[in-house]
Every structure is written in C-alpha cells, then in structure tokens.
Image (cartoon, rainbow, N blue to C red; front, side):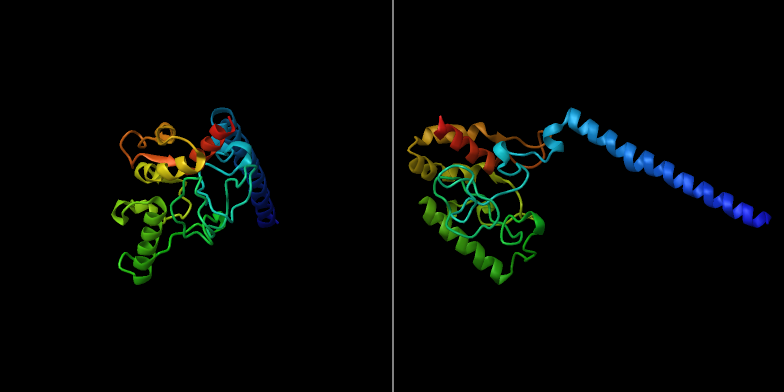
Length: 215
C-alpha cells in the first residue's frame, strides 16, 4: 500500500509539474515574446511585408513574364523564375530554390566550382546578361550569375544594380541619372558597419520605381 501511495503521489507531482510548465513555458512565454515583438519590432515580427502584400523584403522574387500581377501592367512577380526578364524591372540574382525563389524549397545548387554543369550555366547566364544590358561579359558581376546558398536572397550588389540602370531608364522613359539616384538612395550598408557588403533589396527598389511612375 505504501509503495502504491508513493507511486500515485509521484505521478500526481509529475502531472502537476507538466501542467504548470506547459502554462508557463508553452503559453506564458509565447505570449510574452509575441507581445514584445509586436510592441518593439512589429515590422520584423510580422515577416517584413512589402507594401500591399507584395511579398516579404526578406525573400527574393523573380521579375519575369511568368510572374503574378500585382496591379501594374506587368506587376511584381513571385514564384517561378522561368520566362523572359521584364526589361522595366531590375532583375534579381539566380535562384536554385525549387523552380526559383520557392520559399518551400530553400536551397543552393550544391554544385562545386569545378562542376561542368555549373560552369556552363554561369557562362550561359553571363552571356545572356551581357547581351541584355549591352555590356562586355567581363563587366557582369558574380552575383548576377550565381545563386545564393538559400536561393532566396532578396539582395543584389550595387554593381549589378548600376549595370541595369541604362536599360530600366530607357524602358521607363526616365533619365539614367534619375534611376541611378533612386538606386543609390536604396543602398543598404554593411551589417554593424563592417560585416558583408553594401547591397540593394531588389523588390523594394522595383516598388519604388512603380511608385515613382505612378506619381
């Protein structure tokens, strides 16, 4: 009988401890952290959404003829990276996530730098971009022809953005200086002042272009 009562008390203590810890850590902690996030960092806590639900500033997008319309004549595009690049928009770097910029399949190509398929793909991209932008293949930056490790990088280098300025300006009927000024206003500095490189969020830059045209 004594051992039975001891086992029952032990089981009771275990159940009560589980309930208390579930309430404190599973419910209370979650509510506190969510509340702090909504109070101090609502933009980041809600997924860093772009204006009018046009995606997230944290996830790259493709700007091609197969993209989904978001209200403009062609619109910002999401999902597949197939299709022709829309000449009036700045283009993102390549993506190896699913069919391209697929948030459900974040990944790189996992191909080594000497892989024949990767080398061929890079050369093909370099030639296509050089032709599209009217420059020498040697002028095409590395990030324009290589995918990021996640396949969802929303940024491009300042060099790649400036390379695209003449085309975008011509397609939108703007001066190159106007478009270049817009690019420079969107440059994001190095993290903590020294980590990484200066970069530009492509979706935010394209949204700014649409807003400027709308004005």
